[in-house]
Length: 183
Image (cartoon, rainbow, N blue to C red; front, side, top):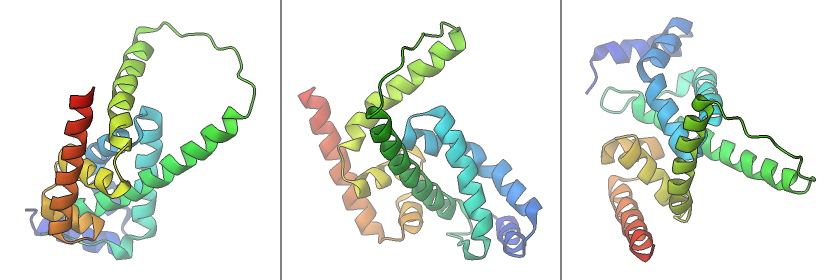
């Protein structure tokens, strides 16, 4: 539970105070960035998505909703929508690029790039199994299992009943367990 400080912060944001947006970013930017990475599996896309999340928050600042005194569930809802749109854009871009001839590429052997690519490859392997889930189950899994929201907070972020969150998460876990046992 968050103190009245968050209520005041949201009131300031709704009033158009850019410092309130900066405070929300400082408070929740890292969590939303990780949430975006878990959805997109790419650090650069996650950075872009996180920027888009806060642009959307500013554009829709009068719509911010608190859940148990916290704006975080609403922010996760915005982030989920931004990631969904980014994923669609990526798929369209990939289909367009697949129609072009492939240029020769050279590998970069820098250690930092290798580490980054390794983490992206691992995340993509996980996402390959997660992407087999229906979209509504992926969203619940991302919010509860990866972002650490409670069932109630996830329900608020997705604007669905708590029971729906529980059943979607249960089905997602069962499907993933079956995938792991099949592999």
